[in-house]
Length: 309
Picture 1 (cartoon, rainbow, N blue to C red):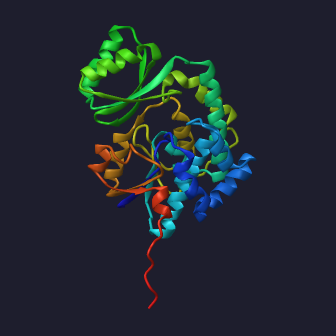
Picture 2 (cartoon, one colour):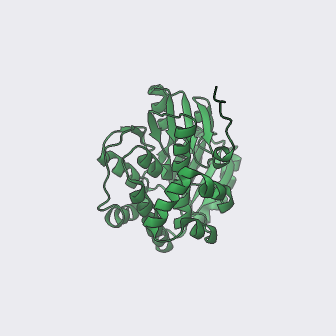
Picture 3 (tube, rainbow, N blue to C red):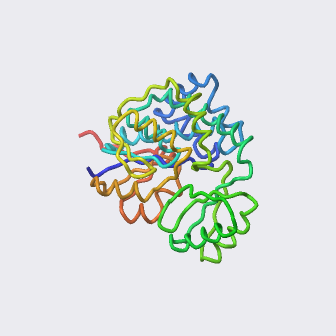
């Protein structure tokens, strides 16, 4: 087993970043048509009109782009992965690609999930944000967290991206202090995310999504093994995949654990399917694999065909 496919976590991206791909690529057009039928509106039109980074349409467009790129790579590049993974939001396209979740069901679930998430954080945890930062190894992060403990501050580690790259959820009034403390530890604060993500404190949201979004959604045993982004476990059953998606609300992402599992499975090449400027670029990924980015602009480039003899 030497090839894997990874679907990245969702990131802010503009309509212009993927519009031509969604409109012109045959695989993307097929999926967009199915998404339109499920949503009851034009995905592309709604995505163009809605400026929110994580709107319902943006979430569905991101997933559709990731899956269309994977389909294109299979048809045009001969990509044939034997295992897959998807940190955070990437778990949903991974479940679809692996054959555990129907695309139309994933579209409906993604839209419903986004609406419940927006409603929940409009009422609850309105003062909580998630801060990403690099260049803070775990021993120095432990010191920062100890300082927070001593100040009586609540926090939760949302993502362990690399040995020195994390995402931490805190109350917003502590954000300036946290950034200064990270800089004092030699760190580089990056972006602040709203709504926050991946904390046991959000268990009521998980319950709502299980009850109102995934109730009645059929999951199948995956045809392709899926590596859990929470602990690196290899998932092979429908129930495990369903639980992984729900647990994205309350459990942190541990990307080094995924990398370790992929290496142990014999993976040497990782295809990163979708808009990504993080998961395929951090050291724990690039030090262990040849990374092949699958991007909309790549899929739109004319490919040279071997002449017929």
